[in-house]
Image 1 (cartoon, helix red, strand yellow):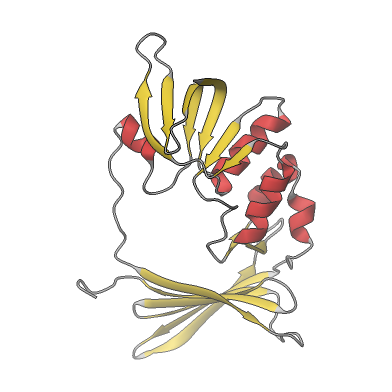
Image 2: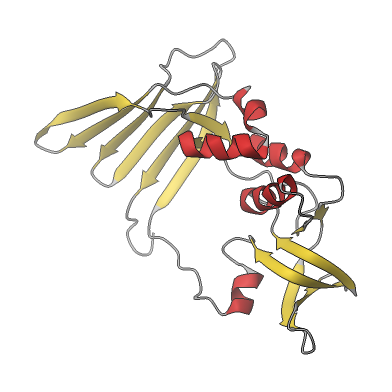
Length: 227
């Protein structure tokens, strides 16, 4: 059985950022990720001032800024029946706001870790306490066992670690969302702003990532039961 000080389960943003933060403080950890490659799902998201300060401490902020336009303002548009359209515009932040492609974030965090920290293809099937030491024993699908002094769960909604801890099961939201990108090879004409439009039960939005790439989303806030 392999014995390690700190084991982090899940190689997404949370797990990689946690491991990198420990590394910046001189603390070694291992990240177990069930996928055979660095995760690639997801679209993009906005990061505000405090997020950029954290990324600066992790040492990946400058790399992410290379493919991320600064956002200068936020525009909210409300369209309601029998009521004139309402619109409000304000500064995005007193600091820094940008949209970041999720894949860029994951790759930046993963590449900043020491070689050997991220173990791909390491799927956990169970966690049990060692009777002698009370340390968690992690059993992997490939038959390997790892004893960890500290176990950190960053393994998402179907978390093995949360089940081991007896946490309440996750619940599905009754909203539905579609997210994606539109690429403009010759450049787009949109302002460097985040726009949100709400009409009845639907919210849509647009966020330019670069001068050629725009992130967009459509959300149904409450989806009728059965649909």
